[in-house]
Length: 479
Image 1: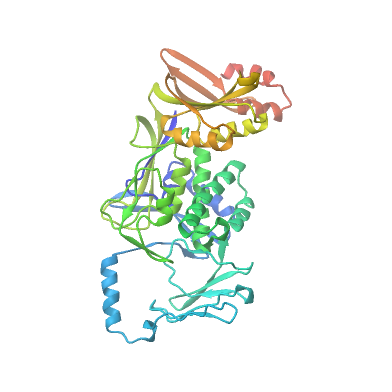
Image 2 (image 1 turned 180 degrees about the vertical axis):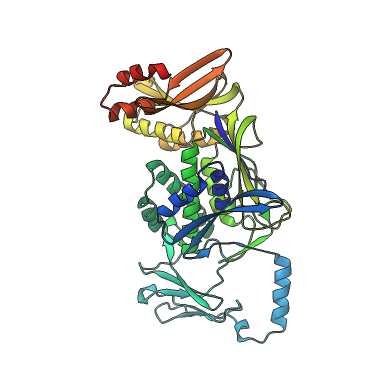
């Protein structure tokens, strides 16, 4: 079985995961060109080899309008004491308390504060024009929750005497951007669901609805690019399983637009609920909301590395430097177990249409189920019904049972633990007179089986106006 194991002992950011998966590919520069050809607004991706602690890996740099997003780790105690010392010796007018004008229709909302930038002016009546905001650009993700009345939200920031103008992007704009890109339906769906996990986390943390969340332009486009890259690579690598180690989130504090926050940041912590994670002694943010969302979405399980025959290794390097190598390592290979534990989850349905049940089957498969099938049954009051059964790994039980409870009319599911004996499986490509066909192989227990991939046979039949059986007859000498 094709598997990817992700080692997150040094955390996980979206760009690090994309870089690690990319190193599993041969045509790495070609992939970067493909990413840039998508024309994600303002985005330019580049690739470089990076050495950390003597280990070489890849780093994909994503710039949005020539800026690269970053988070700022701080020594909270040191910085706090230093700030207090500065205040004791300062008579700057910026130490004055905040002045608020609460009638939003009467004029600007003025904040005077010590942020090393001077007075801070907010015009909160957005119907009169853009919202101008001067701030430190060290944030990873800026969330603004006020009603913009359809007007743009603009940030003017002072960086080395230069002025930059940024807009903020809501979920509808994100969806429009993604839907306008040249992506497969699966990748487009994966991207929006991963980004939806981030939006849901920010919504919960800030206590507002998802449609009120507005992401800082650089942060949102940076996250979109990382998510698209990972989703594209996962589609191409097509692992049957992705197991992730417990996630090292780091410790200490990180500076963002809302102030100084503990590590893990609130959105990251929300996303990682129910997932093994730990802090450690490294002072810094090691896992970002984007990295957390990607791992939560694609992982079929979390734990130590299983028995795997590794065929290739990828390392994705982060921007930060610590006393240990800041990288995500991924291992691609085949599992060697011929016996495994599985779980069967089933429920009885007598009030759902075939279309609705079919939708649930497809959804379960998309989320990593090993098999999903239906059985006609007789139910109480002589009603004909359908038993829906999902087969999955034990570590997937919570996810699959939740999907079945949410998307069917059942009030409960039954869970049965089983053990199965399986043949080791792998795939090869075979050139034939009709084109390339993938051949599935299964070996073990002194048994060997081969079978052509159905999708390839069906595609050739359509393209050549042949029947399915005619294609099989013409390629049988190659199988």
